Image (cartoon, rainbow, N blue to C red):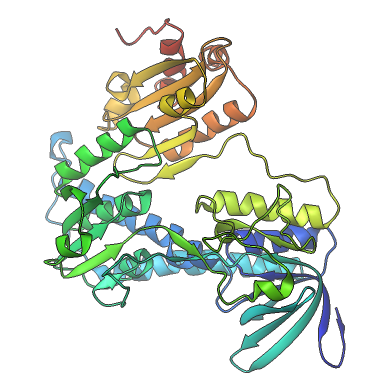
Length: 453
């Protein structure tokens, strides 16, 4: 980097150090670019520090508590587990810090300059960064916007950090609430309900009118998780028209209603970057904005708020900047809800495929017929495959059950490679293993199932 009297010249400035930002920084550096990565917080963003990783850590701890209390039929009886929420958070924080340290080491290894502060555009090739101890200016050849989004509030339920909480704030509660009302239908709302009910809190899950739980998955998956949450003790209220009123009796209220792209303070008009009516940055398949020198990735572009999408888009942006023929056009985007049971899906559901004009064939294998699922005392769930009837090409897979998060990887690869039901059916899987259920589901679609009637 060449330092002038007023500004620093740099190949690439990246605003935001979440999954899309730090990954694009590393990839750009690998391709020979000098990179400055700007963020007011530590690298890793909300996903690492306040979302994905903390929630999965707490889900693991909560499930351990629940398993300890509910294993008598296996011949395992233990005394009532004592929950030390402070120690649980200390362990969760140690996981976050370990991963955060790893990200910092990777950035240092690739000689990415970490710039603490908040950045905004001065013009089409310059940003100002305001930090605690002053400001910096960068003149860039290329820029990547990866600032993410903020939780969306609901009318009458403005976030205050005390009673009305964002999902991230809920994950940081150091005392178990007397009662907690969770408003939402997405995987975040379902995961939060799972955590708190397994830790022993009184949980109310409020589903707004004209919505259903896990709306982003096949309806049968949502129904199965909803039934399980009820069995765990969650009080579910459907078709709620006034969520603020329905939550009045709860000591804490959590709102999970999506994200608002964090573009308001970037001064995008100064840089010639276009946005839509929701404030999302408009991009092409190379992640370029209306200013060809500026790219955008992740939640700020308004797509599904998934870290795997941000990571892939970050790589595409970095490779495009380096002159490589990169394009964001995935055939398969796996999505997961770490609920009980887990839900994972990739591609189209049967309903979506029919709406898209396909003639479909489906195969469904219940985990109640899986030897491995039964030996894990986790036989609630199923695997469903959806294929095009004419050529048997796979269109989508939904998995409900243990380790769905891992099993969906095979389905994503099959979809990306254009596999058919025959390809899945002819692939040998370990026995007894949960992955057999995908093979059995494909066989069911072909009318050759062996282990179900």
